[in-house]
Length: 119
Image 1 (cartoon, rainbow, N blue to C red):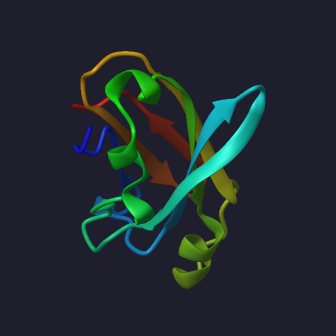
Image 2: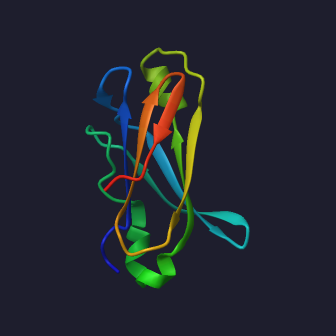
């Protein structure tokens, strides 16, 4: 498979703007252990263009199925805005269990966040 199966973006709902320059890590659960697959930094639109190393290009679709976690490092983002915040990291766990694209957005403010399966 050579198409990115997992994408994400961050919207800072307190400003109604994308959250740029946020470090993101993608993990997969294998044998009850989280294994780091890749890293990314959100662009000016709050999105990742692609994961480093294009890890997914080496795998067949069936090999991609499993449980994943995206960890958003939020401390530096809030510190750059000089905004006290409650959550230093937001982690979203989800299952990739079909061949559809998996878009995992993060809606963020200094004292809360939410997510959903996007398209």
